[in-house]
Image 1 (tube, rainbow over the protein chains, first blue to last red):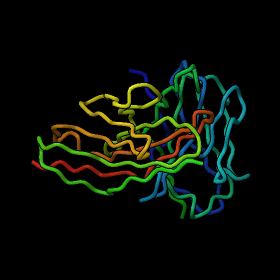
Image 2: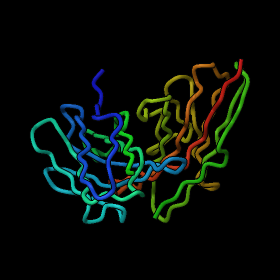
Image 3: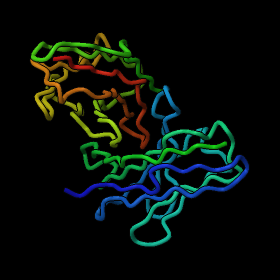
Image 4: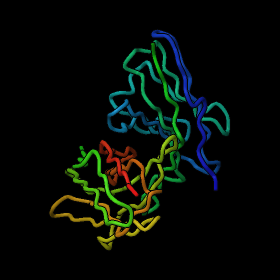
Length: 117
Length: 113
């Protein structure tokens, strides 16, 4: 069964550094998402991406964050000038469509645990 | 804006017993509702979803949920749990016109032998 994959599984960085989290969505999917979960807290929406553009973003997704689909398979989340409070599990997700008269299922990857020291 | 409240952070239950994981939501617009499961060190897997129609929704692994609009609830149930059902369960809501999914804090189901 096709699945969303994410690398690395765990990323440790120093405060102020830049990190790139990588995701490979399911191959025929068109919509891509990033979510994060701070330890012990809720899973929070960060951003959705379609047709090489951001479709929607949350207030968490400030100008330190960016997303990119650099080729036909990868979907990346870049965080510049990392802060301690960026430490969290980051989940990538993808779906075929957003709405076909039916809300399409978002398939989630296993997550990347980001630790900012 | 939408929000989700999962009323129990942990639910311990014996194997083969029934279980109900409670979820309430609030929204000013029509919503879609979901339950996801997260096994240790894995991603989020969709258990079931409510879009419209019948308020009783059946999902994978013998789980079902009932949408109750008047009580703004979407409780998850299973008549007989297995050890393998031990996991974190997330209730989630999405507005029918938007992309983002709002998650609850999660309920840890712990099935004991």
